[in-house]
Image: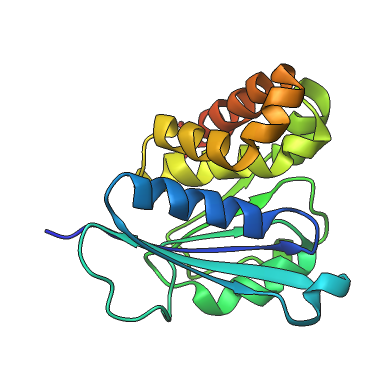
Length: 188
């Protein structure tokens, strides 16, 4: 039976959802899977909601578009509202617990709605700049579409030049990836 994961990541411009999507898709591709990524920027580069659509499968993917996602991750209040249309009874919906005032906007039809403290974890335990890598770790743990080691290799490829300049960044990013997986392990 084919395993296909449809993922929608959404956040404000600058939160790194496009980078995370690109790294996840590259990791899956490097593991021999079919992988598609469609970024949605529009005016988001000027401070709006940025959405990244990903599909990963062990079979050929027929169309890059999808109606419903298996996993939706929303990193801002506007992203919570913007991504509701991709949720159905099979969707796991994750949002950052630091987002206030979205309780009435959370999808009632989702399989599960999970609030995780990604931003607080980044600020208190690691560094605010790895907030998006924590999110990536959570996405990988929920979907189980790729191994954490594959994501580490893709991170190394994407950020290797920065890791060479400051080796502590490698450790910080790898720890953030693992910490993101830990945040959801008892929730799914």
